[in-house]
Image 1 (cartoon, rainbow, N blue to C red):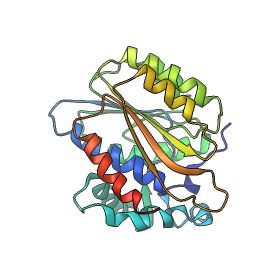
Image 2 (cartoon, rainbow, N blue to C red):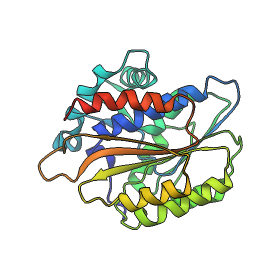
Image 3 (tube, one colour):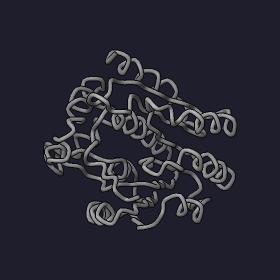
Image 4 (cartoon, rainbow, N blue to C red):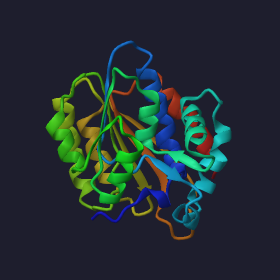
Length: 257
């Protein structure tokens, strides 16, 4: 249940998709001089060393951020986060979504992160001492704290999907989150798999949230037999301009085919 560690996959093409759009959304939200809440249900360790044995073993970062940097201008929020991370933590460091949030948000904003894996939670606390880091189930944490204070804000749901029931239970969780927090931006990341395991989940989400934005990109498998062939985000109450940003990003992914 708690075997997943993102270090093996940090900086892969799914991260490029997820993190670049997250950085864009947070940058957009912080343009307004009003406080906001950021919540993350499956945070990971926040900072990853792409020269670590685990990262080199899969080679996913070499196929991911190493080649995708050219897609973005230096002033893109994602590139600013990457630059700040390497300047602070070294050239081979890569920011997870919690670090991107900490780098982008302001003192008036609140950051609440959940991570149940003991080792990952410890690393998260050490990396981000200014954030609230809870060693709890992220789905349960979200139910307990919605709506947050401030009410304006964004929640990222980024599970590993190593628990296969997630595909069935996530639409129910999100339906309840949406009712409890009817002004919040709710973002779900999901893998696009050769097995098609995500299809029924997406059907349920689109029925429950017909105005949600579905952003999907496809890419070659990281290695022969690898089941993930793409990355998806489902966004409830997407910020203005996100659809255009996602479409532009997709054109870059389309060149990988």
